[in-house]
Image (cartoon, rainbow, N blue to C red):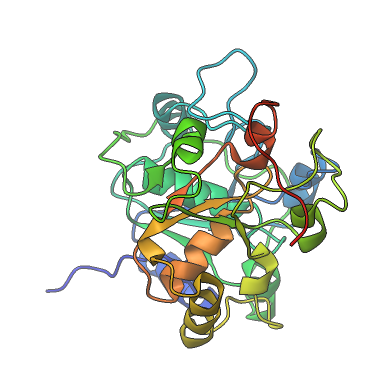
Length: 292
């Protein structure tokens, strides 16, 4: 008898429906959010979410709060692995569970929880390809309201990290080295330094390549086919070693879709500079570049 399949990267709406029907241990997380209006994500969740899904708030659950231990800097500092594990325990999550994460913003926010679970050593976590819009288009049920209340704590235990976190000191030490290729997921105008709506300095880390995270998503709201993503990243890297890639964005959140896309394309897992531009530009001694 074979065990039920695990989903470590993407899961389709149909696959999730089958997984729900199978009775396998499962926890679904709605990570919808809006940087400009942080309360909007919870409002969207309460309006409609996948039945049984819990809400994971970027500010409250997936970032360190002021004064708490943090694993990175920047506008959305990572909580410590221990603090993240404590939150997972509080919502009833177990090591045996398949986790599925989604949002309604093109993987802009749910990728953060996907990466954090990998960082906590949990392999069975998948992004719902296409998010809530594709789920509803496939006939998936939704419910409104506050969602489930955990009835018992989980027994989640941290394992060896499955994804690599890179510090700002490492990025600075390897600046200009062939051992490091920085890929910046922000919009081109922000990358070039023409506009900067969130951080005090405009521009990018010298030598970084620009790959807006939205470039990974096709018109049907799903990730582009693997072959197309492979060709696009090969063109972006232009002979640079894919293993050298370190992803960043403004605050370490929207960098993750690029990481997922590279894995969809067949590349080995790459690294994340979670502090990203917001941490980099906070120190005037660090060099900043503008233009293409």
